[in-house]
Image (cartoon, rainbow, N blue to C red; front, side, top):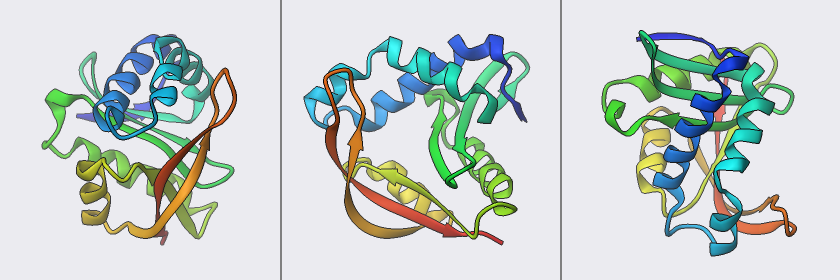
Length: 158
């Protein structure tokens, strides 16, 4: 496995991986209105928008996972691992990479997880992230913001 910066021409592959992982973690755990707003076009637009702040895990030409950062705010926007690559350390490697990239600019990194995504919540807690408790996240959609209950996780950076 190799970690590297994503390349602009890879945006379609990033979008497909991001959407598949997002659906795995969010189906049945977010409002129907948000599910409808998160079609393939949403992920295509966001993969292109964030390609410059995306790190990918690859095995030759195969994408195993990705992590998307907002380096201005210290947010881990998305960590996605292909279903077939889960359990092999891909997510942990991507998360450590994100922490390292943010550590020079921020004292604390953060991310949000929907309460029902128990797999993700356990993963972040295992890696030393702290659940700061529930909050509401205003997710943008074409018809206006969708209020989504989430938990905010933080990690003090070295």
